[in-house]
Amino acid sequence: MQMPDGTGGVLVDSVEDCAAAMLKLLNDRELAEQLGHSGREHVREHFLLPRLLMEELRLLRTLDCGGA
Image 1 (cartoon, rainbow, N blue to C red):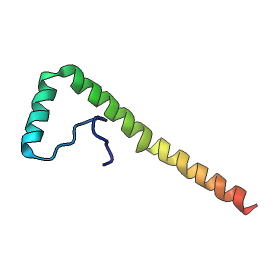
Image 2: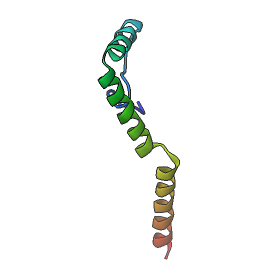
Image 3: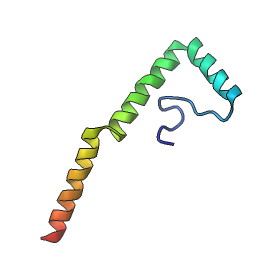
């Protein structure tokens, strides 16, 4: 659930769905590239260290201002 469907990949419910999705991506290079790009962006925005550090700094600022 960290990667919504269509944001860097395809969610599947069965082996058959997985095989169909893989064939679709192998046959549609543009779709595969779009999913790869959007997946990298999603990870960059939601999971990488700079974003986590910014959240920590916001929290510390909130705690500092609240304690004054």
